[in-house]
Length: 486
Image (cartoon, rainbow, N blue to C red):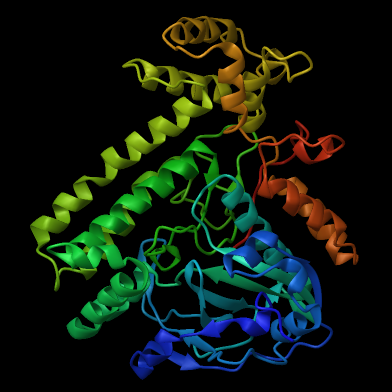
Protein backbone atom coordinates (compact mmCIF):
# COMPACT_ATOMS: atom_id res chain seq x y z
CA UNK A 1 0.00 0.00 0.00
CA UNK A 2 1.53 3.30 -1.11
CA UNK A 3 1.40 6.00 1.57
CA UNK A 4 -0.36 9.20 0.56
CA UNK A 5 2.76 11.09 1.62
CA UNK A 6 5.15 9.16 -0.63
CA UNK A 7 6.83 10.41 -3.79
CA UNK A 8 4.70 8.04 -5.87
CA UNK A 9 1.56 9.77 -4.60
CA UNK A 10 2.44 13.07 -6.30
CA UNK A 11 0.14 14.06 -9.14
CA UNK A 12 1.26 16.30 -11.98
CA UNK A 13 -0.44 18.90 -14.13
CA UNK A 14 2.30 20.02 -16.50
CA UNK A 15 0.88 23.27 -17.85
CA UNK A 16 4.20 24.39 -19.30
CA UNK A 17 4.27 21.40 -21.66
CA UNK A 18 1.04 22.73 -23.20
CA UNK A 19 2.60 26.03 -24.24
CA UNK A 20 3.77 26.49 -27.84
CA UNK A 21 6.57 24.11 -28.78
CA UNK A 22 9.31 26.76 -28.89
CA UNK A 23 8.70 27.68 -25.23
CA UNK A 24 10.72 24.58 -24.35
CA UNK A 25 12.52 21.50 -25.60
CA UNK A 26 11.72 18.06 -24.25
CA UNK A 27 14.92 16.52 -22.90
CA UNK A 28 15.42 13.34 -20.92
CA UNK A 29 17.67 13.64 -17.86
CA UNK A 30 21.15 12.24 -18.34
CA UNK A 31 21.79 9.09 -16.35
CA UNK A 32 24.55 9.54 -13.79
CA UNK A 33 26.15 6.46 -12.30
CA UNK A 34 26.93 6.08 -8.63
CA UNK A 35 24.28 8.53 -7.43
CA UNK A 36 24.00 8.72 -3.65
CA UNK A 37 21.66 10.85 -1.54
CA UNK A 38 23.33 13.19 0.94
CA UNK A 39 20.33 14.80 2.58
CA UNK A 40 16.58 15.25 2.34
CA UNK A 41 15.07 18.52 3.52
CA UNK A 42 12.08 18.23 5.89
CA UNK A 43 11.05 21.74 4.81
CA UNK A 44 11.25 20.74 1.15
CA UNK A 45 9.26 17.58 1.82
CA UNK A 46 6.58 19.57 3.62
CA UNK A 47 6.34 21.92 0.63
CA UNK A 48 5.29 18.91 -1.43
CA UNK A 49 2.91 17.65 1.25
CA UNK A 50 5.24 14.73 1.98
CA UNK A 51 6.60 13.22 5.17
CA UNK A 52 10.41 12.80 5.01
CA UNK A 53 10.24 9.36 6.61
CA UNK A 54 7.82 8.18 3.91
CA UNK A 55 10.15 9.07 1.04
CA UNK A 56 11.71 5.97 -0.48
CA UNK A 57 15.43 6.77 -0.67
CA UNK A 58 15.97 4.32 -3.50
CA UNK A 59 13.17 5.87 -5.55
CA UNK A 60 14.44 9.39 -4.94
CA UNK A 61 17.99 8.34 -5.79
CA UNK A 62 16.80 6.86 -9.09
CA UNK A 63 15.01 10.13 -9.89
CA UNK A 64 18.01 12.31 -9.05
CA UNK A 65 20.37 10.01 -10.93
CA UNK A 66 18.33 10.33 -14.12
CA UNK A 67 17.40 6.64 -14.07
CA UNK A 68 13.64 6.75 -13.59
CA UNK A 69 11.01 9.48 -13.61
CA UNK A 70 7.87 9.60 -11.50
CA UNK A 71 4.59 8.79 -13.24
CA UNK A 72 3.18 11.94 -14.81
CA UNK A 73 6.49 13.78 -15.23
CA UNK A 74 7.24 15.38 -18.60
CA UNK A 75 10.80 16.74 -18.44
CA UNK A 76 11.67 19.82 -20.47
CA UNK A 77 14.15 22.68 -20.68
CA UNK A 78 12.57 26.14 -20.72
CA UNK A 79 13.53 28.83 -23.23
CA UNK A 80 14.02 32.44 -22.11
CA UNK A 81 16.44 35.34 -22.60
CA UNK A 82 17.67 38.14 -20.38
CA UNK A 83 20.09 40.93 -19.63
CA UNK A 84 23.38 39.67 -18.25
CA UNK A 85 25.46 42.40 -16.62
CA UNK A 86 23.36 44.92 -18.51
CA UNK A 87 23.69 43.37 -21.96
CA UNK A 88 20.84 41.53 -23.67
CA UNK A 89 21.58 37.88 -24.42
CA UNK A 90 19.05 36.13 -26.71
CA UNK A 91 20.61 32.67 -26.34
CA UNK A 92 19.49 31.73 -22.84
CA UNK A 93 17.43 28.91 -21.39
CA UNK A 94 17.77 25.98 -19.01
CA UNK A 95 21.30 24.88 -19.76
CA UNK A 96 21.86 22.33 -17.01
CA UNK A 97 18.47 21.86 -15.43
CA UNK A 98 15.14 20.36 -16.41
CA UNK A 99 11.60 21.09 -15.29
CA UNK A 100 10.63 17.49 -14.53
CA UNK A 101 7.02 18.23 -13.77
CA UNK A 102 4.54 20.51 -12.02
CA UNK A 103 3.18 18.75 -8.93
CA UNK A 104 -0.21 19.65 -7.50
CA UNK A 105 0.01 19.88 -3.72
CA UNK A 106 -2.30 21.00 -0.90
CA UNK A 107 -0.42 24.33 -0.95
CA UNK A 108 -0.69 24.79 -4.71
CA UNK A 109 1.48 23.88 -7.71
CA UNK A 110 5.17 23.18 -7.22
CA UNK A 111 7.78 22.80 -9.95
CA UNK A 112 10.23 19.92 -9.54
CA UNK A 113 13.41 21.04 -11.29
CA UNK A 114 16.48 18.81 -11.52
CA UNK A 115 19.72 20.80 -11.63
CA UNK A 116 22.72 19.01 -13.09
CA UNK A 117 20.46 16.95 -15.37
CA UNK A 118 22.75 17.12 -18.42
CA UNK A 119 23.06 19.11 -21.62
CA UNK A 120 20.12 20.81 -23.31
CA UNK A 121 19.82 22.88 -26.50
CA UNK A 122 20.44 25.94 -24.30
CA UNK A 123 23.70 24.70 -22.72
CA UNK A 124 25.75 26.75 -25.19
CA UNK A 125 29.32 25.80 -24.27
CA UNK A 126 28.38 24.23 -20.92
CA UNK A 127 28.46 20.55 -20.05
CA UNK A 128 25.05 20.49 -18.39
CA UNK A 129 26.46 19.12 -15.17
CA UNK A 130 26.50 20.44 -11.63
CA UNK A 131 29.26 20.01 -9.07
CA UNK A 132 28.84 19.04 -5.44
CA UNK A 133 30.15 22.40 -4.22
CA UNK A 134 27.53 24.51 -6.01
CA UNK A 135 24.75 22.01 -5.30
CA UNK A 136 25.40 22.06 -1.55
CA UNK A 137 25.62 25.84 -1.57
CA UNK A 138 22.23 26.14 -3.26
CA UNK A 139 20.70 23.47 -1.03
CA UNK A 140 21.81 25.27 2.11
CA UNK A 141 20.89 28.68 0.70
CA UNK A 142 17.26 27.68 0.31
CA UNK A 143 17.17 26.45 3.91
CA UNK A 144 18.92 29.56 5.24
CA UNK A 145 16.69 32.00 3.37
CA UNK A 146 13.51 30.19 4.36
CA UNK A 147 14.71 30.17 7.97
CA UNK A 148 15.12 33.94 7.75
CA UNK A 149 11.65 34.24 6.17
CA UNK A 150 13.08 35.48 2.87
CA UNK A 151 11.11 34.26 -0.18
CA UNK A 152 13.14 31.60 -1.96
CA UNK A 153 13.26 28.44 -3.96
CA UNK A 154 13.91 25.32 -1.90
CA UNK A 155 15.32 21.87 -2.60
CA UNK A 156 13.92 18.51 -1.67
CA UNK A 157 17.31 16.81 -1.72
CA UNK A 158 20.91 16.95 -2.83
CA UNK A 159 22.85 13.98 -4.20
CA UNK A 160 26.42 13.25 -5.27
CA UNK A 161 27.23 10.98 -8.20
CA UNK A 162 30.19 9.17 -9.66
CA UNK A 163 30.97 11.80 -12.30
CA UNK A 164 34.12 13.91 -12.25
CA UNK A 165 33.43 17.42 -13.48
CA UNK A 166 35.99 20.01 -14.50
CA UNK A 167 35.50 23.53 -13.19
CA UNK A 168 38.35 25.47 -11.61
CA UNK A 169 39.45 21.98 -10.56
CA UNK A 170 38.13 18.46 -10.97
CA UNK A 171 35.11 18.08 -8.65
CA UNK A 172 32.48 15.47 -7.83
CA UNK A 173 29.30 15.68 -9.88
CA UNK A 174 25.96 16.24 -8.17
CA UNK A 175 22.28 16.91 -8.69
CA UNK A 176 19.82 19.07 -6.79
CA UNK A 177 16.04 18.63 -6.88
CA UNK A 178 14.83 22.21 -6.70
CA UNK A 179 11.30 23.22 -5.75
CA UNK A 180 9.56 26.46 -6.70
CA UNK A 181 6.00 27.64 -7.10
CA UNK A 182 7.10 28.69 -10.58
CA UNK A 183 10.30 29.14 -12.58
CA UNK A 184 8.87 31.97 -14.71
CA UNK A 185 11.52 34.68 -14.94
CA UNK A 186 11.67 38.25 -16.13
CA UNK A 187 13.63 36.80 -19.05
CA UNK A 188 10.63 34.81 -20.28
CA UNK A 189 8.78 38.06 -20.93
CA UNK A 190 11.85 39.69 -22.48
CA UNK A 191 12.12 36.84 -24.98
CA UNK A 192 8.52 37.20 -26.16
CA UNK A 193 8.79 41.00 -26.30
CA UNK A 194 11.96 40.86 -28.37
CA UNK A 195 10.23 38.40 -30.71
CA UNK A 196 7.22 40.76 -30.95
CA UNK A 197 4.89 37.93 -29.95
CA UNK A 198 2.17 39.95 -28.29
CA UNK A 199 -0.41 37.16 -28.08
CA UNK A 200 2.05 34.81 -26.42
CA UNK A 201 3.20 37.62 -24.12
CA UNK A 202 -0.38 38.06 -22.91
CA UNK A 203 -0.84 34.29 -22.69
CA UNK A 204 2.17 34.02 -20.39
CA UNK A 205 1.01 36.91 -18.20
CA UNK A 206 -2.45 35.41 -17.85
CA UNK A 207 -0.91 32.02 -17.07
CA UNK A 208 0.94 33.58 -14.12
CA UNK A 209 -2.29 35.14 -12.90
CA UNK A 210 -4.45 32.04 -13.34
CA UNK A 211 -1.91 29.60 -11.94
CA UNK A 212 -0.17 31.60 -9.23
CA UNK A 213 -2.03 34.85 -8.50
CA UNK A 214 -5.71 34.03 -9.09
CA UNK A 215 -6.85 36.86 -6.80
CA UNK A 216 -5.56 39.33 -9.39
CA UNK A 217 -8.05 38.05 -11.94
CA UNK A 218 -10.77 39.88 -10.00
CA UNK A 219 -9.08 43.26 -10.49
CA UNK A 220 -10.43 45.68 -13.09
CA UNK A 221 -7.08 45.55 -14.96
CA UNK A 222 -5.51 42.15 -14.15
CA UNK A 223 -2.34 42.66 -16.19
CA UNK A 224 -1.63 45.95 -14.47
CA UNK A 225 -2.33 44.29 -11.14
CA UNK A 226 0.18 41.57 -12.00
CA UNK A 227 2.94 44.08 -12.73
CA UNK A 228 2.17 45.98 -9.53
CA UNK A 229 2.36 42.66 -7.66
CA UNK A 230 5.79 41.95 -9.16
CA UNK A 231 7.03 45.43 -8.26
CA UNK A 232 5.79 45.12 -4.67
CA UNK A 233 7.11 41.61 -4.11
CA UNK A 234 10.48 42.45 -5.62
CA UNK A 235 10.80 45.56 -3.45
CA UNK A 236 9.96 43.56 -0.33
CA UNK A 237 12.40 40.82 -1.34
CA UNK A 238 15.27 43.26 -1.78
CA UNK A 239 14.42 44.89 1.54
CA UNK A 240 14.90 41.52 3.22
CA UNK A 241 18.17 40.89 1.38
CA UNK A 242 19.49 44.26 2.58
CA UNK A 243 18.26 43.81 6.14
CA UNK A 244 20.01 40.45 6.49
CA UNK A 245 23.23 41.23 4.61
CA UNK A 246 22.64 38.92 1.64
CA UNK A 247 24.42 39.53 -1.67
CA UNK A 248 23.00 37.60 -4.64
CA UNK A 249 25.93 38.66 -6.86
CA UNK A 250 24.35 37.78 -10.25
CA UNK A 251 21.17 39.83 -10.53
CA UNK A 252 20.73 39.29 -14.26
CA UNK A 253 17.12 39.60 -15.42
CA UNK A 254 17.01 35.88 -16.23
CA UNK A 255 17.70 35.26 -12.52
CA UNK A 256 14.73 37.36 -11.39
CA UNK A 257 11.54 35.53 -10.41
CA UNK A 258 8.17 36.84 -11.53
CA UNK A 259 6.87 35.72 -8.12
CA UNK A 260 9.47 37.61 -6.10
CA UNK A 261 11.49 34.54 -5.07
CA UNK A 262 15.23 34.42 -4.58
CA UNK A 263 16.27 32.38 -7.60
CA UNK A 264 19.52 30.87 -8.93
CA UNK A 265 22.15 30.80 -6.22
CA UNK A 266 25.66 31.20 -7.63
CA UNK A 267 28.46 33.27 -6.06
CA UNK A 268 26.17 34.60 -3.34
CA UNK A 269 27.35 35.47 0.16
CA UNK A 270 25.99 36.54 3.50
CA UNK A 271 28.14 39.27 4.97
CA UNK A 272 30.67 38.57 7.69
CA UNK A 273 32.16 42.00 8.42
CA UNK A 274 29.78 44.69 7.26
CA UNK A 275 30.88 46.03 3.88
CA UNK A 276 28.40 48.23 2.08
CA UNK A 277 30.02 47.54 -1.29
CA UNK A 278 30.64 43.81 -0.83
CA UNK A 279 31.01 42.09 -4.21
CA UNK A 280 31.64 38.35 -3.75
CA UNK A 281 31.61 37.52 -7.49
CA UNK A 282 35.18 37.73 -8.80
CA UNK A 283 33.97 38.32 -12.38
CA UNK A 284 32.01 41.43 -11.33
CA UNK A 285 35.04 43.71 -11.38
CA UNK A 286 32.90 46.84 -11.78
CA UNK A 287 30.77 46.00 -8.73
CA UNK A 288 27.51 46.12 -10.68
CA UNK A 289 25.90 43.66 -8.30
CA UNK A 290 27.51 44.80 -5.05
CA UNK A 291 25.45 44.79 -1.86
CA UNK A 292 24.69 48.51 -1.93
CA UNK A 293 23.76 48.36 -5.63
CA UNK A 294 21.08 45.68 -5.27
CA UNK A 295 18.09 48.02 -4.71
CA UNK A 296 18.96 50.03 -7.81
CA UNK A 297 19.66 46.96 -9.92
CA UNK A 298 16.31 45.45 -8.99
CA UNK A 299 14.58 48.64 -10.14
CA UNK A 300 16.58 48.53 -13.39
CA UNK A 301 15.45 44.94 -13.92
CA UNK A 302 11.84 45.85 -13.19
CA UNK A 303 12.11 48.64 -15.75
CA UNK A 304 13.28 46.12 -18.34
CA UNK A 305 10.31 43.91 -17.45
CA UNK A 306 8.02 46.92 -17.71
CA UNK A 307 9.34 47.68 -21.19
CA UNK A 308 8.60 44.08 -22.16
CA UNK A 309 4.98 44.61 -21.11
CA UNK A 310 4.43 47.83 -23.08
CA UNK A 311 2.40 46.00 -25.76
CA UNK A 312 -0.08 45.08 -23.00
CA UNK A 313 0.00 47.96 -20.50
CA UNK A 314 -0.02 51.73 -20.96
CA UNK A 315 3.46 53.22 -20.51
CA UNK A 316 2.30 55.87 -18.06
CA UNK A 317 0.68 53.23 -15.86
CA UNK A 318 3.90 51.22 -15.93
CA UNK A 319 5.84 54.28 -14.82
CA UNK A 320 3.39 54.97 -12.00
CA UNK A 321 3.77 51.42 -10.75
CA UNK A 322 7.56 51.56 -11.01
CA UNK A 323 7.45 54.75 -8.95
CA UNK A 324 5.98 52.71 -6.09
CA UNK A 325 9.09 50.52 -5.89
CA UNK A 326 11.35 52.76 -3.82
CA UNK A 327 8.82 53.80 -1.15
CA UNK A 328 7.71 50.16 -0.84
CA UNK A 329 11.29 49.01 -0.37
CA UNK A 330 12.12 51.78 2.09
CA UNK A 331 9.02 51.10 4.18
CA UNK A 332 9.67 47.35 4.29
CA UNK A 333 13.35 47.86 5.09
CA UNK A 334 12.56 50.31 7.89
CA UNK A 335 10.18 47.83 9.53
CA UNK A 336 12.75 45.04 9.35
CA UNK A 337 15.59 47.14 10.71
CA UNK A 338 13.51 48.60 13.51
CA UNK A 339 12.65 45.06 14.47
CA UNK A 340 16.30 44.06 14.47
CA UNK A 341 17.03 46.99 16.80
CA UNK A 342 14.08 46.15 19.03
CA UNK A 343 12.02 49.19 18.10
CA UNK A 344 8.29 48.53 18.07
CA UNK A 345 7.17 52.08 17.38
CA UNK A 346 8.23 54.46 14.64
CA UNK A 347 10.11 57.71 15.25
CA UNK A 348 11.32 60.24 12.70
CA UNK A 349 14.94 59.81 13.78
CA UNK A 350 14.97 56.02 13.29
CA UNK A 351 16.45 56.16 9.81
CA UNK A 352 19.45 58.12 11.03
CA UNK A 353 19.91 55.80 14.01
CA UNK A 354 19.89 52.76 11.70
CA UNK A 355 22.28 54.33 9.20
CA UNK A 356 24.70 55.34 11.96
CA UNK A 357 24.62 51.81 13.40
CA UNK A 358 25.62 50.39 10.02
CA UNK A 359 28.32 53.05 9.61
CA UNK A 360 29.64 52.10 13.04
CA UNK A 361 29.78 48.44 12.03
CA UNK A 362 31.56 49.27 8.78
CA UNK A 363 34.13 51.67 10.23
CA UNK A 364 34.99 49.24 13.05
CA UNK A 365 35.02 46.24 10.69
CA UNK A 366 32.59 44.51 13.01
CA UNK A 367 30.81 41.30 12.17
CA UNK A 368 27.35 42.15 10.85
CA UNK A 369 25.38 39.28 12.37
CA UNK A 370 27.21 38.86 15.66
CA UNK A 371 26.83 42.58 16.35
CA UNK A 372 23.06 42.42 16.01
CA UNK A 373 22.96 39.30 18.13
CA UNK A 374 25.19 40.91 20.77
CA UNK A 375 22.85 43.90 20.87
CA UNK A 376 20.03 41.41 21.47
CA UNK A 377 21.97 39.73 24.28
CA UNK A 378 23.64 42.72 25.86
CA UNK A 379 21.53 42.68 29.06
CA UNK A 380 21.62 38.92 29.42
CA UNK A 381 24.23 37.28 31.67
CA UNK A 382 26.56 35.14 29.59
CA UNK A 383 25.50 36.75 26.32
CA UNK A 384 27.79 38.06 23.65
CA UNK A 385 29.69 41.18 24.62
CA UNK A 386 28.85 44.10 22.37
CA UNK A 387 32.14 45.82 23.19
CA UNK A 388 34.04 42.72 22.07
CA UNK A 389 32.21 42.74 18.75
CA UNK A 390 32.50 46.47 18.05
CA UNK A 391 35.89 47.90 18.94
CA UNK A 392 35.18 51.57 18.39
CA UNK A 393 35.27 54.71 20.54
CA UNK A 394 32.01 55.70 18.81
CA UNK A 395 30.11 52.74 20.26
CA UNK A 396 29.16 54.35 23.58
CA UNK A 397 27.95 57.51 21.85
CA UNK A 398 25.65 55.49 19.61
CA UNK A 399 24.46 53.40 22.56
CA UNK A 400 23.52 56.53 24.47
CA UNK A 401 21.32 57.65 21.56
CA UNK A 402 19.88 54.15 21.39
CA UNK A 403 19.01 54.16 25.10
CA UNK A 404 17.25 57.49 24.71
CA UNK A 405 15.33 56.07 21.77
CA UNK A 406 14.26 53.07 23.87
CA UNK A 407 12.63 55.46 26.34
CA UNK A 408 9.90 55.93 23.71
CA UNK A 409 9.12 52.20 23.74
CA UNK A 410 6.47 50.65 25.96
CA UNK A 411 8.03 47.17 26.14
CA UNK A 412 10.34 46.29 28.96
CA UNK A 413 13.90 45.11 28.37
CA UNK A 414 13.12 41.42 28.84
CA UNK A 415 10.30 41.43 26.31
CA UNK A 416 12.25 43.59 23.85
CA UNK A 417 15.40 41.47 23.96
CA UNK A 418 13.39 38.28 23.50
CA UNK A 419 11.73 39.83 20.44
CA UNK A 420 15.13 40.85 19.06
CA UNK A 421 16.48 37.34 19.43
CA UNK A 422 13.56 36.13 17.31
CA UNK A 423 14.72 38.25 14.37
CA UNK A 424 18.51 38.39 14.84
CA UNK A 425 19.93 35.02 13.76
CA UNK A 426 22.65 33.14 15.56
CA UNK A 427 23.31 30.70 12.72
CA UNK A 428 24.13 32.20 9.33
CA UNK A 429 25.17 30.54 6.09
CA UNK A 430 28.70 31.88 6.22
CA UNK A 431 30.96 31.01 3.31
CA UNK A 432 33.71 29.48 5.43
CA UNK A 433 31.23 27.22 7.22
CA UNK A 434 29.65 26.15 3.95
CA UNK A 435 33.14 25.29 2.70
CA UNK A 436 33.72 23.05 5.72
CA UNK A 437 30.47 21.23 4.94
CA UNK A 438 31.46 20.86 1.28
CA UNK A 439 34.89 19.46 2.12
CA UNK A 440 33.37 16.90 4.50
CA UNK A 441 30.83 15.84 1.87
CA UNK A 442 33.56 15.47 -0.72
CA UNK A 443 35.23 13.05 1.70
CA UNK A 444 32.00 11.07 2.06
CA UNK A 445 30.74 12.55 5.34
CA UNK A 446 27.28 14.14 5.04
CA UNK A 447 26.74 14.63 8.77
CA UNK A 448 28.00 18.25 8.86
CA UNK A 449 25.67 19.04 5.95
CA UNK A 450 22.70 17.63 7.81
CA UNK A 451 23.62 19.42 11.04
CA UNK A 452 24.12 22.78 9.36
CA UNK A 453 20.90 22.42 7.37
CA UNK A 454 18.98 21.82 10.61
CA UNK A 455 20.52 24.86 12.31
CA UNK A 456 19.90 27.14 9.34
CA UNK A 457 16.26 26.09 9.18
CA UNK A 458 15.78 27.57 12.70
CA UNK A 459 18.55 30.18 12.83
CA UNK A 460 17.31 32.18 15.83
CA UNK A 461 17.20 29.32 18.33
CA UNK A 462 20.42 28.74 20.28
CA UNK A 463 21.46 25.07 20.43
CA UNK A 464 23.83 23.91 23.19
CA UNK A 465 27.07 22.47 21.87
CA UNK A 466 26.69 24.07 18.45
CA UNK A 467 28.90 27.09 19.03
CA UNK A 468 31.19 26.18 16.12
CA UNK A 469 28.30 26.84 13.71
CA UNK A 470 27.91 30.45 14.85
CA UNK A 471 31.57 31.41 14.58
CA UNK A 472 32.73 34.23 12.34
CA UNK A 473 35.79 33.68 10.14
CA UNK A 474 39.17 34.63 11.55
CA UNK A 475 40.12 38.28 11.33
CA UNK A 476 42.86 37.52 8.82
CA UNK A 477 40.59 35.49 6.50
CA UNK A 478 40.69 36.73 2.89
CA UNK A 479 37.61 38.49 1.48
CA UNK A 480 34.90 36.26 0.05
CA UNK A 481 35.50 35.94 -3.69
CA UNK A 482 33.62 33.28 -5.63
CA UNK A 483 33.13 32.24 -9.23
CA UNK A 484 29.85 31.86 -11.12
CA UNK A 485 30.33 28.09 -10.91
CA UNK A 486 29.98 28.33 -7.11
